[in-house]
Length: 206
Image (cartoon, rainbow, N blue to C red; front, side):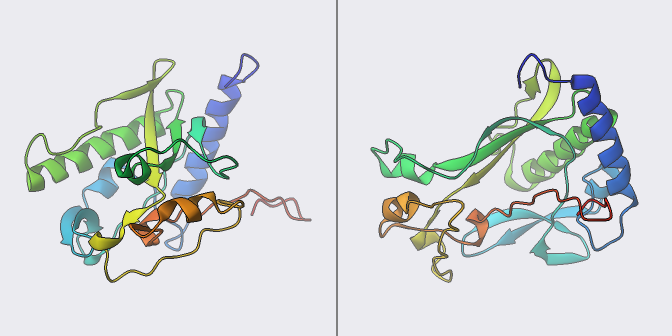
């Protein structure tokens, strides 16, 4: 963000985007709302051993939701220079990141409330104090959300998964591919899909 950023216009765009998202059909990922969170439960998965939020009617598949907001901070690919990695733990924690805020818009505040409910579900399953990083995040006083995706999964934790090559837009210089060595893979949980807004010849957003 810079001093020329129009926060009021951003709030208006967030409001319009949230309204559009709430009116879309079932083919699109739903918004994360307090009501939507009531349809979730926590299920244990194996290989890798994890606990994930799932829909009550479909406990075999991880649930996905949309969050409408503005990116106010980020660390995103492509990697153009080799990071300073001295330990396996540093390599394990190498990740991409965005911080999203709603600039105080009520739809984003509801998303944060819904996430608090989901965290409570995990704590009920795993025990108090087992979930880290849940302290409130802020951006200029407004609620924010930090979203991370690690580049690697420990190979021994996911023996059923094959390594998936990094996309060229993520790792154009093969830096990540060289770093992962024999201990890690880039698996399904590490992949991030990127979307780009396109306006077609009819002026419609795609």
